[in-house]
Length: 271
Image (cartoon, rainbow, N blue to C red):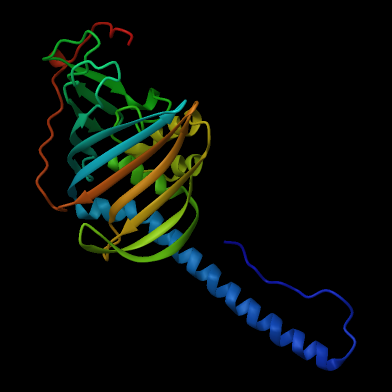
């Protein structure tokens, strides 16, 4: 928030009036300074949440992604675990049923790694026992949207680019006491401030999204760790709301990236 000092216009006709104005201005200024300090504290707390996750080491996660375009709304859900130190995670993503009435699609297994996304059961002509590898630094969204489950660390690193934030109040998430913050993150700023493993992917997102500003709702626990994060992305003609829930910090996470012979090298059929 910018300062909100307000000054009264008009002619000053008496010394008494000058005194009253000084008192009024002093009171208003004090409130504005306090508001600024609270805003700065909120921005600082949210920006540091990615570092708090790295200190925590690992966690389980649930994700949901709601996409709205042309009057159609779909929701993609995922669950898995993530190692914030190694910047790797494993998720199972469930796609919504085909609107044409076809059988439910098989869940997609996703491995997230610094600069890469691996997908199994991808379909589109890919053998069931093969993985598809996608370079996330070439994606228009840096894998904030493409995989159907936002990379938890990428989502947290985006908060390094917070341009404004406010403290909403205390609440609970899954029975855990948290502090609720609301604000706007700036993609180009986040890309510059991101860790080495996420910088190029967020840089791609900064160029690919139709809006640089990403509204968010963040919920931090006593250790400053994200427990819940909701972000709103603008992609082409669609609006995407991504929600990530983090819990069971310190859980064991075993992610083994596919060997080169297990990665599909053929052409992926167009859907």
